Image 1 (tube, rainbow, N blue to C red):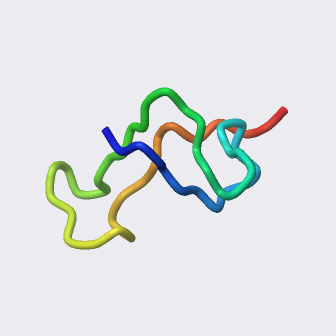
Image 2: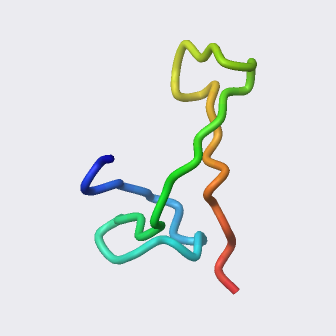
Length: 51
């Protein structure tokens, strides 16, 4: 697994200083089933808003 995961979505509860993601796991899905051609065709399901 990647050691450092970068994230610019500072409204996520897993966002940490330096644009680091501090979630224990990352879940990414494709818009079109199992095939994605570029990053715009994917979504991060790990996102949770800060409360």
